[in-house]
Image (cartoon, rainbow, N blue to C red; front, side, top):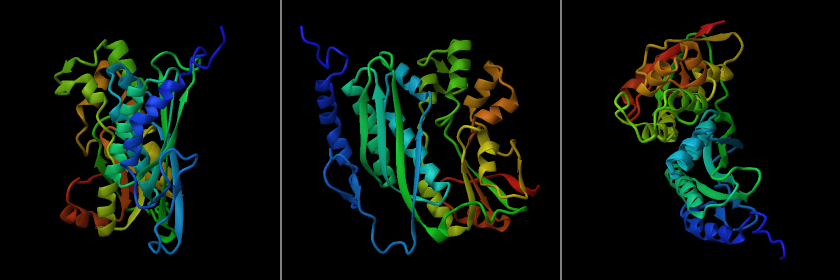
Length: 333
């Protein structure tokens, strides 16, 4: 009997079904800059003309970590697609970029078209919400590399900015304040520690209602990582933003320190904002030391913005929607 690709573990039929399922989802994200149809070997995107005098391209690549395991265990795949796009959008925002288009990479041991459709549904939903195109991507079925049911998901985002309007942290100085934008929960980092504490050590189940959370554990752990695009656009109309840190792995201080110039140091008041209950639950059930909590998790701050002290009044008075909270200040090193 002849050996085939299918007998080696790769199904071209499943790949065809998956493409048919996601084609309309990808097409729904099309923006004015997209050239060509879905399925080309390379995505083509035309930069809008006349909008920027000195345009600079920005890019970022990331994943959602072991939050994938929670999605796998729950059998719910659309929210991690939203997580991934929004995470990458926020990375661009940290340097003042506006997103243009997104590309994804999905790899698995055995392709499940319905699973991939769920992921792409979330990707497309977030792309539409952020006003960007899902320009293309890669789906790889690799038997022997991934165990049954396992998969990986990563994405690359491309954006642009006016060179003079890049946010690089160079103007930060002692006396500036740090404003925090609230997080919805764990977002996309710290899940290895969260799973170790909540699932392995405390033996909680994803479908278990947890009184401290007011919902099932799985619902809490799959809360969507939000995009802060609209809020930052509104903030930039009101104040000069000197620095932005997307609070991911490394915590608040670990990420803010990346944007500080020489001669500056951080002072964070960890009691100045309400900490979402998921963090208290993890800390209590571990137990996990406070220092470790601060190094691993966002603790309720999704994005940190550095601005001049006198800008704080304008923000509190005029900004609608998400309200930043002063979480610290910049000191002289």
